[in-house]
Image 1 (cartoon, helix red, strand yellow):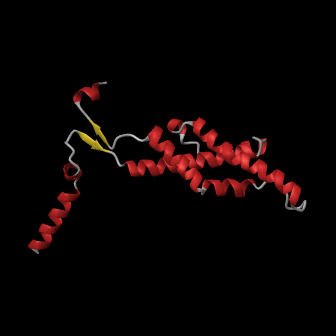
Image 2: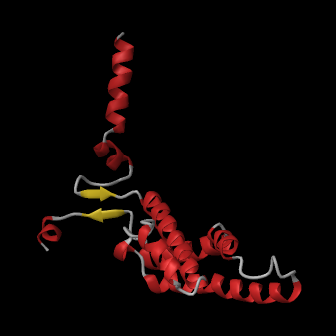
Image 3: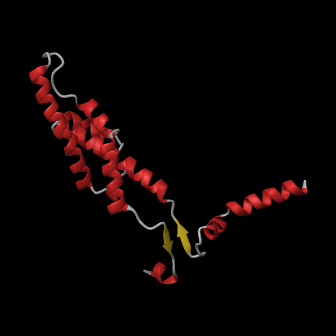
Length: 158
């Protein structure tokens, strides 16, 4: 019974945030931020924003797509956490491909299957290594921050 109590006490102590700070070489005034979680959230937000914007562009910003996007809240909460110039730049990559492919399809496919393949192309791009690489590069260059924030009384008063 004593061993079990001692084991539970050690487990509790080792999982405390202050113990985690000591293990990472941080002081009590430092705040450790889990950047892996932040990076995953950014990648998801960015890719979703690019998907939505590419759908909007591919459908020529039609009233129907505008209505659909107004009702959908997938990207409504992202606010200013993403630079939408980056989203627009990435979305234009796939829209150019959609336009090029649809022009080629009209020439070489039967009339009943020719034309834009917006959903397929946008979903393929969303899941592509190319968009992942773009998002990771943007995160590294523009959005990543140090893992540790040093808190001092002076920094709190600013």
